[in-house]
Each structure stands twice: as C-alpha cells, then as structure tokens.
Length: 216
Image 1 (cartoon, rainbow, N blue to C red):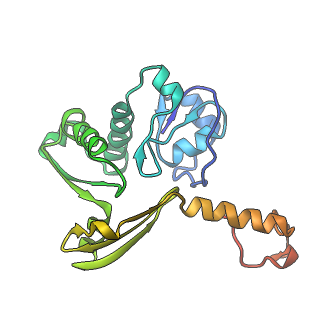
Image 2 (image 1 turned 180 degrees about the vertical axis):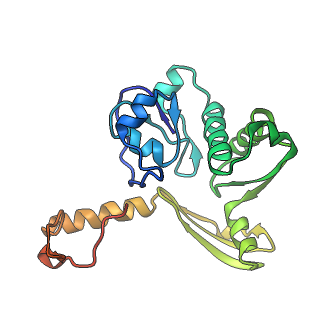
C-alpha cells in the first residue's frame, strides 16, 4: 500500500504495473492511496510513501503511521477493498452475501489473526469467515493429509510437519530470513567478485555471469 506523502521508499523487488501507467499518471490522478503493483510503481516517483502491512509474517505498523494514529485495520481494509473491487470485480455493497477463507501466516499470533477477522466481519461486512494456517491450506490444496511444509517467504522461512490439518508442535521451525535475504547474499557475493552489476553486449554477460538474472 502506498499513501500519498513524500518520504523514504522501502526497497522491494519491482513488479510490473499491469496497466502500463507511469508515475506521472498516478500523481496526476491525486489518489489518496494505491495498492499492489501500482503502489510499487508510484512510490518510485517520491510522491508516495510505501508501506507493508505484513512484515516477516506479522502485522506491521510504520512509526510515522503510529504517530498519526493510523490503524492497521484501516490499512488492511483499504487494500482488501481495492483487491475485491478492482481485481475480483465484486461490488462492495454485495459483500454481506459472501463468505471467505482467511489464510494467515504460520508465525502470526492469535491477536493478529483476530484483528484480521475483525476487518473481514466488521469493516468489509462479510457474512462469515473461516481461518486457516497457510501450511494447512497448502496440504489441503494438494490433497496431502501428511506433509512437511517448507515456506520460504520474503523475510522469514518456516518448516512444519502437518498431519490431518494439525501441526506437530515439536516439528515447527522458524528461521528469521527468507528469499530476499538469499538474493542480497548472492548479489553481495557477485559484487565481491566483480560480477555485479554486469554489462550486456550482444546478449553476452560480462565476467562469465551468463544465466544470472536479477529478480523482478
């Protein structure tokens, strides 16, 4: 989610804007907030602050938002409302007739899950909600009653052994790093050996780094 205000932009992998709009297009429209790939694109122009409601699997409120008394529930409600109307093409007034499945992070605590349920039932006014751990959702999706689920997220990695929809507590492992940390490590190693950044001429990578692509 990007709110309209100047400030520091958090560095994150770039996602291509689906509509092909430029930063100037977003700023000229004067929207109070943007979400999804549009938020990542608009924040590059400096006219928006970029905020992430979930970091390392937990709900996260930036210091400047806390100082303004901004609610995390408000942020989540804004993003979900946008996703439902813009992506799913469901009118907001029709939501009371819908039920939903809320998939939460494996490291998220009960209080955080309750806050998200509150957004679904009170703010979005949906009829009912079922809450599932992301590891449970993964095994049900693949029809595997017993499985070891390894989730390499952006900032955290979890390992859990699941049986009939239940996590074996003694098997759960949470590591405080994820795929973005792996990318930074590889990038640093390549830079140390003079392979990053590299030049491209005629489709050939310099310094023998062919086949290595920066994630987009």
